[in-house]
Figure: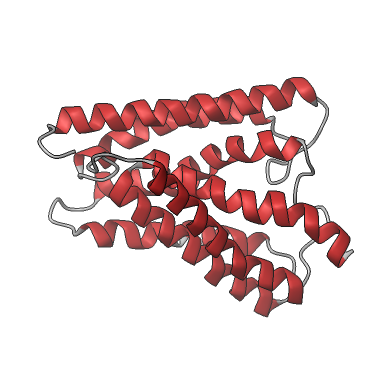
Length: 227
């Protein structure tokens, strides 16, 4: 924020990170209590609640070198409903390419977690994804890169961490895999730009918005439309 010191900016960013971490852990805990025997996408045999808690703690420490590079700090004054509505609209736009790919080459039927578990699962897994795909590699680059390295050079390789992962686990035809790579790259680049401008909470908020349209709303519609 204008006139706010580095310490003040980092404290504001930390408070918002804690807010998102508490939201994610709460959703994971709720899902664990409601359906303790259910298996969740991506996690394999791991349990959502401890994974979310570990990522919350890990994320807190990973943000330290990122802050010192001047990234992820809260610099914008007067964040309000227009920013939230902007994240919601951007999430909807980013979901369109993924939906188009699904319409042409169907993804697996069990790709999405069904309602109502989806409402708790996706906010929790959003934190896990942000820590593993964005904060972890970005923190490493911030620690290892020379001090004079431009911000865009720190962010650019991080953009492609999640797209490569999604491409590798995709079981569809090769063209679909490359389209998934392009689609996820667009989402990742948008998130990192939001992180640069508004901080971690906005980046995670954009992921949750994307998940809302892609995994929750389209996830429910695709079962009756495509199968």
